[in-house]
Length: 311
Image (tube, rainbow, N blue to C red; front, side):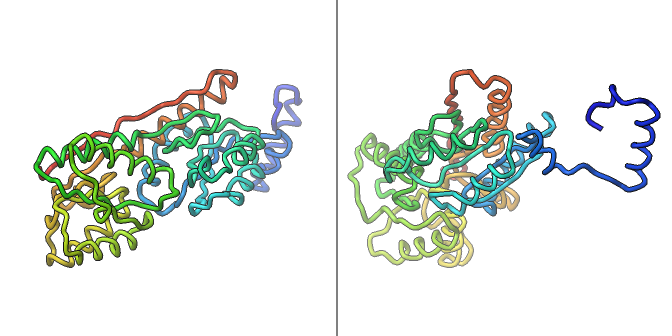
């Protein structure tokens, strides 16, 4: 089956006939074991259910299909160790790995441990969506700069009470986004007010709960930045409940698009991070790394423009 040119015609025809009669298909697992590699690309993301990562998967798939690779997806549930996901990828002998780290490993003092774990994968790795200091190819957005520009855009519209709804402090993206928020305030000459910083987790439920608390505060913001699409969905739910269906209680900028707003024709301001392009670019980089393993690591930063429709 693997080397038909060295098999006699009669033997090849006999084997082919028996394969058809038995409806035989080769075991990819057995092939992986014998070849000590596979035709599978692994993809590890924080949570499978987030629509942002669904778009990312589409970009990855469009590239890997062209190169005849199959895909194996896994969520690490924002687990800083990611042992189960990485162990599964190693057991499957993936040909390459597209990986989104969960936390700020350097700040936790475990970056070297993660690097050793990834090195033992014995396959090319591309880190996506965030730069945590790993020695590998990296593709991500400049969230810090994007949030800074969002603050400045709101300040230019006369807003001085700009709230930010953000995730956990240890999350590397939270750190970068918060730094961008502080830089924007400083550049706009706006005094920092810790009461306008509302923290939760990067979930819709958390966004809803934090927004409800913000609405109940005596000192109200005039503008709000939400720091991922799930937080934005929770924010919109809470605002619509409070205003009986309206979304304009505050001037709002969300990080990442929400497709439903576009489908419903509701104006929506957002920092546009193209998840499909992130996945496509990362997969293209991985294909090049597989073909040219000795090339220097690449660090690619994708643009994330501010799309504003209500101001």
